[in-house]
Image (cartoon, rainbow, N blue to C red; front, side, top):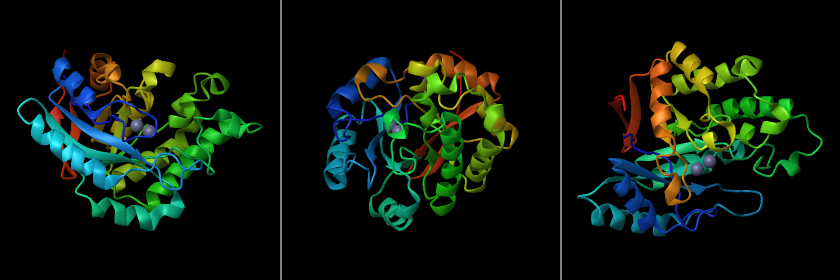
Length: 266
Ligand SMILES: [Zn+2]
Ligand SMILES: [Zn+2]
């Protein structure tokens, strides 16, 4: 079973799950290791998704100790990327001893596509294009994180308008993002929560294949679970997909250092 490097607990505004419940489910599933990645989206438009980092570390350190003989627990964070936050982001990632920082774009033009009504009147194809362009700009302005979360997050909420959009339609913009990741040695995340609405991870196999072709090697894998039932969600299919896309290893981080783990069949 793969390690799961993306999950949330009651430290995130959109989860009420006690930390212990997530850990105990991962142990039941036989997952060798997990990384906690609660949300911190500074300047989020409605004030949610702020993280009490001191309390978070205190709790997670306690959990690591409590479960040390049963599972490898790592402490991470999912940081919301916005260009104007560059200085704050840089100082925040050094203020706490994170194993792993996911950089995620939850906000485009100050609005979260989780609420598609905020983009009323805009052309869905154009906003997806803008989303990729803005992702690239964000990576340029701040790149002290270890993996880019759910590269096509926006597409999850516009699947009706976008249809089954393909990599080819946005090849230039997506390539620009992938190249930046490779330049800055940032991993690409395979986020299996995409299977819930899009029947594929975020991003899909075409993007993963292209990343490989461009020389990308580091992939982190996370189910982005906010409740215990979704830990390790669709990981078996993901293993087959990654192998089909030419990957033999996936990556986990400790103390922000990558560890390459062989993807074994089954
Ligand atoms: Zn996210
Ligand atoms: Zn998440």
